Length: 369
Ligand code: PLP
Image (tube, rainbow, N blue to C red; front, side, top):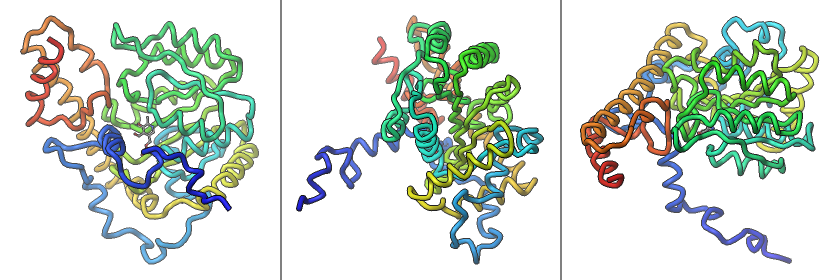
């Protein structure tokens, strides 16, 4: 009999030990830090953590689709508080293992129900998408996104890619705060993208891992999604509370698919649950309870919204400080893109603080001389 371990390729990424690569990954993985460089623990979480309702039953299994209350509140953030799609029960939605798990569940769903389709992923992008869709056996294509010279969106090339993709392709879009470039399409550009995706019958799948971090307001950060909804698309959305609620390790998120009607939504939800069942049976309970408690309580929700703004402003403020520091050093280069982009993991701006911004500007100045 073969020793099963021989079947595992002997390379560092398959090791159980944390390698240097892992630490690098943790470092760039978009975690917010306060101005002292410390991980933040939101007071909205602190206020409710001692009083979680139903804590005595909190260790029991959730249903396969997860916490109904958490999913309900999460859909409101993406589709809108008074969304007609929510009222009409047209959305198939399940709790997912944070944003990654939501993407993976969707990729498996795509493979099962649209087996000949492919996924278009922006360049550059969050590297894990390639692993996710590869493991789901969905062929991958890329579309142009970033224009290095202008340090902005390569809109013309992106539109060409949308136009030239086979009809009915899947397009992965970052709803806001594109990772890693921090470049988001303008409202007019989103309109044109939406129009062209509709013309081609493509399926837009939104990954929204940073809702609230682009503008400081989760409602504004959902504007691209709302536009696509107005334009009558069927869409999918992956949502995560890792960053905007600081619940990184709780793995709490949501996958939703907007369907034609309630009947289709019931069928799609049932299929999503069938995909989840052999993967993890049912999602974890604690983070979902934290989210539903905060979002279900108007006072805690408004405290959370204030704290999201504080986190976003800290990052926006550090962009301004970094640009000002670099401009003071006088190299004949433009640093405008630092404040034009909204969020970037090329430099982990959440790790830049009042205390280290001058040092960082000097270092950048030295290497770009
Ligand atoms: N999508 C993007 C663009 C990300 O940057 C990340 C994390 O860094 C995720 C999804 C997934 O995050 P999580 O699985 O922690 O919610």
